[in-house]
Every structure is written in C-alpha cells, then in structure tokens.
Amino acid sequence: MVLKVYISGMSGNKEVKKRQQRVLMILDSKNIQYEVIDITEPGRESDKEFMQNKSTSNGATVSDPDPRHALPPQLFNEENYCGDYDAFDLANEIDTLEQFLKVASADITAVSNAQIELKQENGEAKHEANGNGGENKENECTEPNKDDENSEKPEV
View 1 (cartoon, helix red, strand yellow):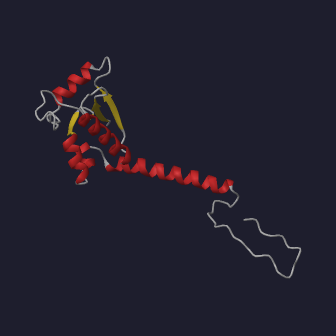
View 2: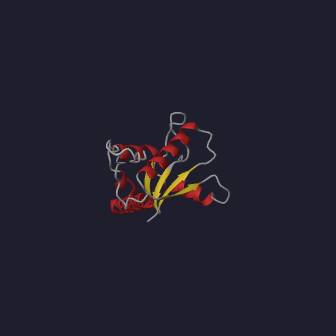
View 3: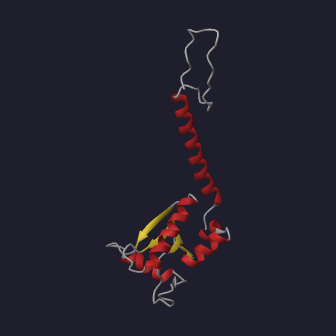
C-alpha cells in the first residue's frame, strides 16, 4: 500500500504551505514512505477532483475556517482516506500515526533497521580503511624511553 500526500505546490496560503512542509518532514523523520501528488501540476485535475470528493475533512485554516473544498495537505493510503492536517498532527502528538495512516509499523521498522544496518556497514568500512580492523580504538600515545636517547617520538 502506498501512502499518498496531496499537496498544492502553488498555494498562496502560508498556513497551507507550512502544514504541507510539516507533514512531509514528519513522514521523513519517521521513515514512512509516501508519494507526493501536487494537485496544481498540469494533468493532475483528476487527482484534484479525487482529493476534493473523497476527503471528509476540509482542512480548515485560520484564514479560511470553512473552505468550499478540501485544502491540502490531505492524506490517503491508496484510495482510503486517512485525514487532513489537523487529524495527522493529533495522531502524531498522541503517537498513533501508524494507525492513522493505516500503515504497518513492521514496514516502518524494516526500513529503519535497513538504514541502521547500512550506516553500520559504512562505518565499519571507514574503520577498516583506517587500518584498525573495524575497531574504533582511541589513539594510543606512549612516551619515549628516557634512557634511550635515540628513541623516536610517537606520532600524534
């Protein structure tokens, strides 16, 4: 199932723009995969109609408390309506975002774990390239033997 976020790339309403940015930022931070659908792009008229007809919440803003049509952002899981910004924000605050978006938390965890493993692999590769066999050892500094005048000073 694909999470779809309907946005307006040309909105003149600053509140709508901020809401869209916040939704995308939260989804990114939680490693939730989604598809952005910009209803203002040419050829997206059917997507705009779908969003307006299937949305049960209008996404009221301070400047437009009773909009004629649903305002972006609106969230769908495939064809299933999830909600508008206010419902999304509430679900995020009470830690029920996965249920709200109708996504399995196992899918999110799998993505997160895969990213962690990739980061660990990249980190180990860097350590091995430094010649310490994948171990993250601190630099060891030894003092020269005072009795031996010919001893070399350690590199720091």
